[in-house]
Amino acid sequence: MRRGWADVRGTLIQQVEGLGTERATQGIGGVHSLRAGVILFDLVFDALAESMVAEPAELDRFQAGVRALQRGIGMRLEAGALGHDTFLLNTVREANAAAQRQLAREIHDHLGNHVSLALRQLELHELTRESSPEEVAVRIGAVKDTLTESLGIIRDLVTQLRRAEREGTLESSFAAFLESMEITSSKVRIQVNGSEEWATQPVLDEVFVVVRECLRNSLAHAGADHVLAVVDIAPHSLHALIEDDGCGFDVSAVATGGRANGIASATERVELLGGTILFTSCPDIGGTRVTFTVPLMDFAGDSVESSK
Image 1 (cartoon, rainbow, N blue to C red):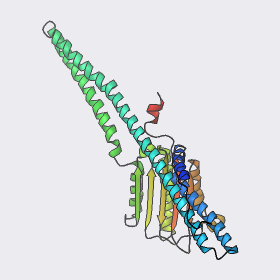
Image 2: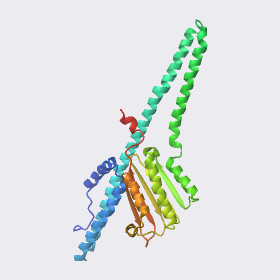
Image 3: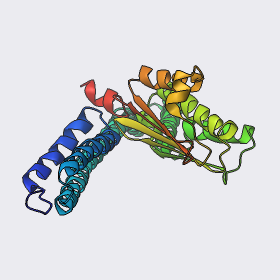
Image 4: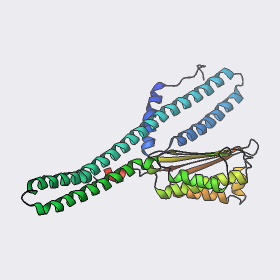
């Protein structure tokens, strides 16, 4: 502030990228860094504002301090996000590589073995078809049986490869919920990003219940015209956002007034999964925003590779 210009040291910014990767390794999502940045800004801004009370003429220095604060937090969040994204991309690549290795093993151990057996039976048939004509029908039948089993293995492998293309459990559940409530996509829009194979079925079930109850509250109590729900599933964490343009409410007043059964239930479900949830709303401005993050420690490929 004494210099009168924003001073953000690049050496500290570079350290944050490694911190972003480290936090991602621990299953801590980027949303927590955003919340920390908001808290840090509020605290330092209040301290700067208090310093202006004693020296109201130092407006330039106050502006420089706020600018340095905003720029420093922004640059750190950006660097941390890059580190977090790098970790996720590497994790996805490792999961895909594990799936490919598993597929290679299935082809080699099962399909390759059956094809080799069929080929051997044909070779034996060529050697004995003239000397032992009575064995021809037996060997031809054995070849047919082996090839039939090979076709079954091929169908199973193709089914596994196409599994990711089918509609996920979470998406189909949301679609059925909206259909049962006769809610149109223009009023409620739901997006599920990422692969549901990275989350266990019990986790997906709990996430569906929490999001569904938030949607019901937005439609029944908030009088919202539009509601958005987004569920992002990454290899190590699941993040959800539910936002509406309704009347809003005083979160603390509801929590202390004994009318927070919905908030308490959602909070309990998320915390039992090891996650965190945040409710943000204001009756004066309107609108309600719910965000929650759940760590995912097991994802497709872990069980295959970790068993080695």
